[in-house]
Length: 127
Image (cartoon, rainbow, N blue to C red; front, side):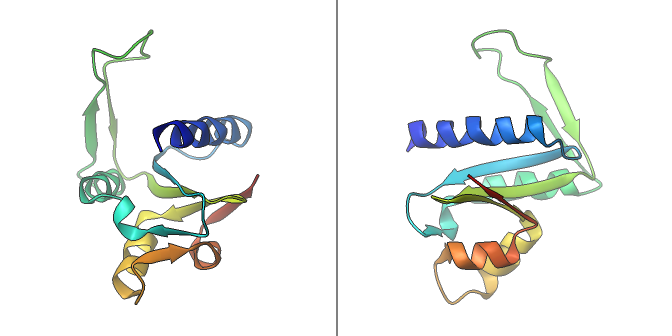
């Protein structure tokens, strides 16, 4: 899973560099099927994404043990976009965290189908 998710992250990074968006936080997930359990996005990740969107904001210290040169020590995101990005086999679904939460709470299913992800996404990126 880690290797697949890192490949998806690299692909999404290339997309963002070629198609800049406003400042935002992204939680990336990947599935090799047409669905992904809502529970794959963990509570602490949802909490952090919501903090980024809020007036309180999120302050994060980059780990000192990371390899290579890091751009800076910490960053603060406040009142910015926050998204759950899901890599399905044929596309990335960029879903606002608030919409993701609403879908999770109202869905009778325990997972998000790719078809439904297309309907609720702010943006779909075909790959």
